[in-house]
Image (cartoon, rainbow, N blue to C red):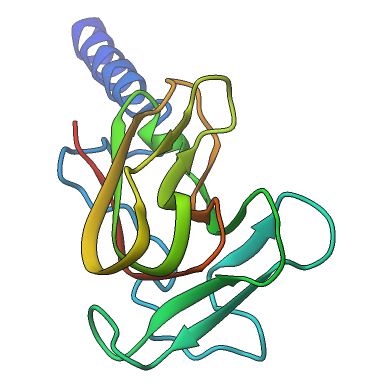
Length: 185
C-alpha cells in the first residue's frame, strides 16, 4: 500500500515538473504559434486593422496603415504601411504572451515588398522586451516585389509578452502579408 502511494506521488511530481512553465503542453519544434489575422483577410473597422496595432516613435501621427486589396502576396488582402511625415520608426505589431515558449527559439516570417523605401528599410522584428532580445530580419528597401523574410530569436527562459511585427525605419511604403510564427527548436 505504501509502495503504491509512493509510486503515485512520484509519478504526479514528475508530471507536474514537466508541465511547469509550459501551460501544460511542451513546445515542439515546428509548432505554429497562433497570431491574429496574419493573412490580413479580416475586414478593417475604420482605420483599425484587426489584430494589429500601429505604433511609432513619438510626435504627430506619421504613418498610415490600411488593408490593400491590390496584388496581395497570398489571398485577397495585404497590409500597406506608409510614412507620411519624417519619423524615426513606425510599426505594425502584435503583443503575444509567449511564456509557454520560454527558452525556445521562435521564427517570425512574412512576405514583404516595398516602394521608395530608404536605406534603413522595411523589416520584420521580434522584441522580447528585455535587454539583448530585439531582432530584425534583413528587410527590404528601395522598390521590390514580394519576398519571404524571416527573423529568429531565442527567448529567455522566463518570458512573458513578446512583440512581433514589421517596422518602417525610413520613408516610403511597405506591404506585409502571410505572417507566420513558429517554434524552431
